[in-house]
Length: 111
Length: 109
Image 1: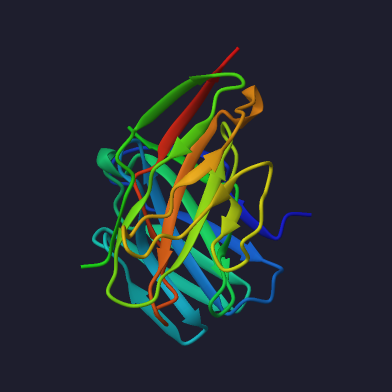
Image 2: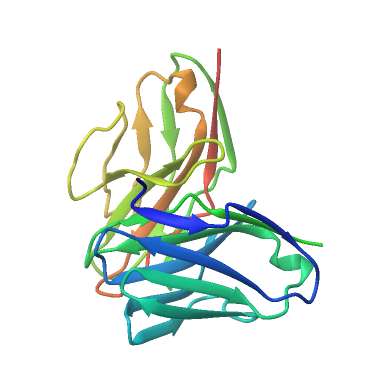
């Protein structure tokens, strides 16, 4: 079983719809992150959480929100999806001072 | 400003040729640096980190603080090395990795 699981793997949604991307982990890490990947731009941090009661905005949080339901779960929501949010979204976890473990990604297309 | 720069979007070499993927960073403190690899349509995987000084799949990377670089090297490229490579910086106690733009390595037969 994967350490970091993202659902769904692929999603096509219409402009203006609300969508939630889910991430769960079995690593026991306190720290979780959401990134989006765009060609030529690398990975950009959307939101991060260092524990259940801690939520922080990243570089590109506008248009997104998150929920840390438990240590193991960190969800990303697009309240009203727009086409330029079409991207590959990655969840990651880490322990203090360590590198990240990534999920397999969610490919989101907004039409 | 904390920043990671990978100047090459695409690096194309022939099988058996040496490979060097460039990474430069901007950070005033003592850096922790990583290389991640992403094979086609797969998740990012940690390739190596400078602290461990390991050699993974024949790749090595040396931190050069004078040149603020952490270039990834392999003496003889293999076709299976074709992937996207990201250099990343972990500044201080922020816990937030800063990624470069990524370099696609294409190894031709």
